[in-house]
Image (cartoon, rainbow, N blue to C red; front, side, top):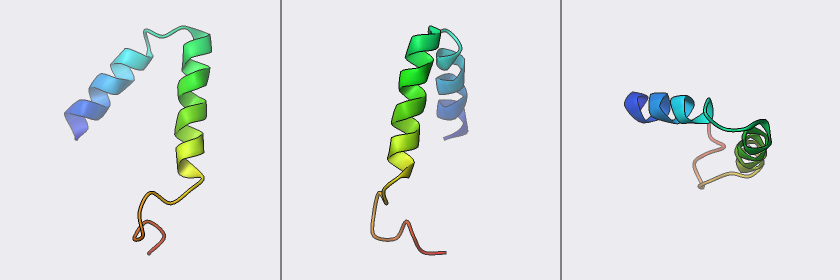
Length: 42
Protein backbone atom coordinates (compact mmCIF):
# COMPACT_ATOMS: atom_id res chain seq x y z
CA UNK A 1 0.00 0.00 0.00
CA UNK A 2 2.79 2.45 0.86
CA UNK A 3 4.54 1.80 -2.46
CA UNK A 4 1.32 2.38 -4.38
CA UNK A 5 0.60 5.62 -2.54
CA UNK A 6 4.14 6.82 -3.15
CA UNK A 7 3.80 6.08 -6.87
CA UNK A 8 0.47 7.94 -7.03
CA UNK A 9 1.98 10.99 -5.32
CA UNK A 10 4.91 10.95 -7.77
CA UNK A 11 2.54 10.72 -10.73
CA UNK A 12 0.33 13.56 -9.44
CA UNK A 13 3.34 15.88 -9.40
CA UNK A 14 3.61 15.51 -13.18
CA UNK A 15 0.02 16.63 -13.84
CA UNK A 16 -1.04 20.06 -15.02
CA UNK A 17 -2.87 22.34 -12.56
CA UNK A 18 -6.17 21.59 -14.33
CA UNK A 19 -5.58 17.84 -14.02
CA UNK A 20 -4.61 18.21 -10.35
CA UNK A 21 -7.87 20.08 -9.74
CA UNK A 22 -9.83 17.27 -11.34
CA UNK A 23 -8.05 14.66 -9.21
CA UNK A 24 -8.73 16.73 -6.08
CA UNK A 25 -12.45 16.94 -6.94
CA UNK A 26 -12.60 13.16 -7.40
CA UNK A 27 -10.87 12.53 -4.09
CA UNK A 28 -13.08 14.98 -2.20
CA UNK A 29 -16.29 13.65 -3.72
CA UNK A 30 -15.29 10.10 -2.79
CA UNK A 31 -15.05 11.23 0.84
CA UNK A 32 -18.65 12.52 0.82
CA UNK A 33 -20.27 9.10 0.90
CA UNK A 34 -19.48 5.89 2.77
CA UNK A 35 -17.73 3.31 0.61
CA UNK A 36 -19.03 0.35 2.58
CA UNK A 37 -21.28 -0.44 5.52
CA UNK A 38 -18.37 -0.40 8.00
CA UNK A 39 -16.87 2.91 6.92
CA UNK A 40 -18.76 4.99 9.50
CA UNK A 41 -17.87 2.78 12.47
CA UNK A 42 -15.29 4.11 14.89
